[in-house]
Image 1 (cartoon, rainbow, N blue to C red):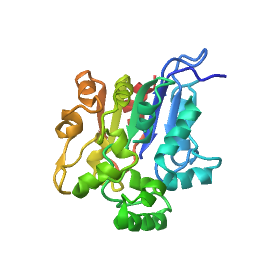
Image 2: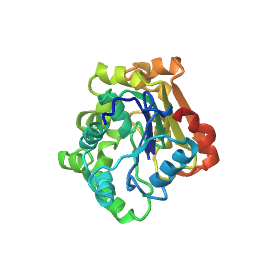
Image 3: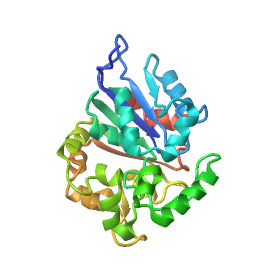
Length: 286
């Protein structure tokens, strides 16, 4: 059966939840696509599996797709560390027809996306890797060494996912020139009007920030904020940044239209209760 429907996306890590367009068959709900983050997998019963089950219980009859990047859960987990993000986005575009699913929204307008929900996603990237998920600490120790030795070298950029959303405010020109993924989808080099048009087509772009997050540095990236260029102490909000004032992605126009939603919860990375999910995110899944 063809997938000629719109979708809702959730990105959780950030995980991303994407609600895509019209209803599926006789079911009045909109299909939901979930994409996990670093060190996780599509089907982990403690993370993506639990979210999928929870949504299915709360919205009877909804179709939920938790994306597997690869042919197995093991490969899916490994790819979250080492597969080129641009290749991952293409892989997902093929399956369908968030920061990573947002790439899907901007690059793949079909099927049309209804709502994008970013749960702890780092839209301005990270400049630190303070803590790793689960039992991946040894991998993260190696990743830190690679990032410190040359995050913007061709080899590291091509083979290390974290390097592709590594945003060094002390070397802004280097980041803009050599970042293979983040600098592209954030329109740092040139404005791609198609990216802008596709993102602006969303009904809602929901961003969730975890106020006690020990995994994301800086946490403000979860709301599209980041360090001011040239230093790594003073932060600026999305509204203060060039990406907003120059409106390279259409975020200022979306904000004026009430399409941007900023939510916060007082917990560590991806730590929220079912009650909080139902009160704050469930309304965007209908």
